[in-house]
Image (tube, rainbow, N blue to C red; front, side, top):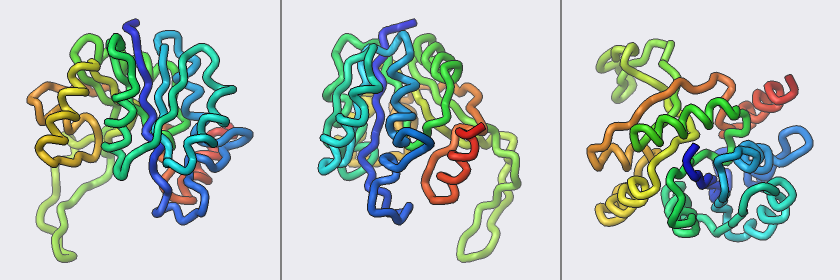
Length: 226
């Protein structure tokens, strides 16, 4: 396995969730969501550094939560930015120059597996960029002004998850170009796509829930309990 740095953007304050505490600091079983997520990377033998971008007022708390978890890797916690993309960029500045692969993973997707991390990292090592995703199974329609414009061919549509992995120099170049162009993407892969670089897709996990709403948290707690 190549030398890997894990970047965890955790800079959001959870406005859509509606809680006073940012959702990444809420509990999933005995541990906060953030700790449950980071633990997967802290235990991975290829990951030498974990960089977390937390909300500025929560940086010290994030460090206290994560220091007992990250024992076999180096931990850095930085203040996140206004957007997720800003947080990834700030975390990249703290990543070591000699890291071969950067794995970016949402702080609020705590139910990943070692196998999924391996698959994405190996694909990125071979092809430069890789994401995990699941094929869309429901009918998808394009709607405007509450009226259907078209029914899309779902055989070509996939719902994208994290982790996403990239050759380090490629991800840095993609973020630098996006900053120059004033572009904000919904994930890191779209920034790499703008360079014209192909992105490999590996199959994700149904259980890889992104906790955005209280209902998501209830589902994640149920899955974690199993």
